[in-house]
Length: 385
Ligand code: KG4
Ligand code: ZN
Image (cartoon, rainbow, N blue to C red; front, side, top):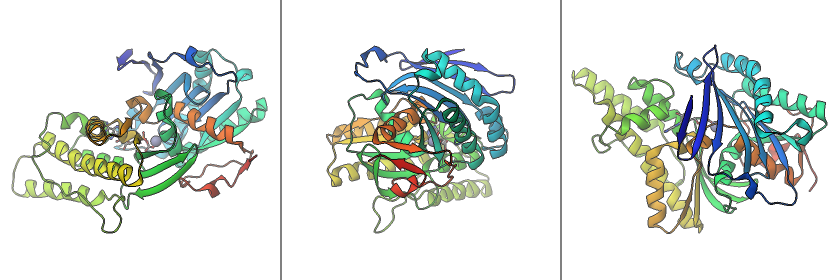
């Protein structure tokens, strides 16, 4: 099956086990524009959660192939990602994805300059599959190994479709496990200025979706249901944390939605799911927009980017687009398929790490809680500079 949306073509097939195999192409992308005299070609691997993804990326910004094998349908029946199933499916799919990515890019392992892999944060068993594959490929070919931080990958997805984007800029990262507001000071240099105190934004979407019966994965389902609802129907609280103006808290909002549902049930009132979805989404979008714009203005940056699965939310994209325009800030966002987990973003981040001289050894391990912006996290890396 072929899906074409906003110049992105996704060729999809479903394997016998229900895993969806996707090859993603940006029809606007002209890789012939890549007129650098020296090409660095990276084979990138991502397996931190429920997507087995492999991509070939040149010079950090030109995607030669982008393969995603999504297990989402397998986990939907359990209402969330089951780590053991995720790891097992990564093992089954990863070699096929590597072959497909190389084939589609029209290259062989000989043409690859380095192998980049997500080594954290994420599910340890899932991460280990990608890390082991990358180490095996590196060992067998003698090509350098570069471990990449998953969230840095999400941020670097912005470089792929915005060839002109360069640091410094402010980036709002909102995924299933993380909500960060950070300043991208330079390639690979991140200063966190705000983060969630409890649930991540994506986690709140997933939990509220489950409570209103939309199921997993919650974000896209709430996004869709909200289009039919009234965002002003219910006033859910917007969490603000005294003395920490850039931090987020979404667990209070989630509890407010649960209380609203319980009260309606006790009173025997019917709940309008679309209104709840739209009102909850508005509460999240408003706070994310407000904090991000405030950060850009107060820290004096005129570029704002968004990253992570929640960055594919249509209301958030619209809200930030408008707020940026109103405040004279340039707004950058990856296409939705590059916001959710993929390996092209790991190839982009891996390129800048490679250029800095970051190399990992065969002792590279999965680090499930790898912190963002902490140079010490490179405890396994040898850096030439
Ligand atoms: O970045 P991601 O693919 O994986 C992690 O690194 O966590 O983010 C997944 C999260 C999930 O919580 C999912 O519900 C959320 O992103 N998400 C969305 C949308 N698409 C995915 N949230 C809101 N609106 C969406 N359209
Ligand atoms: Zn992610």
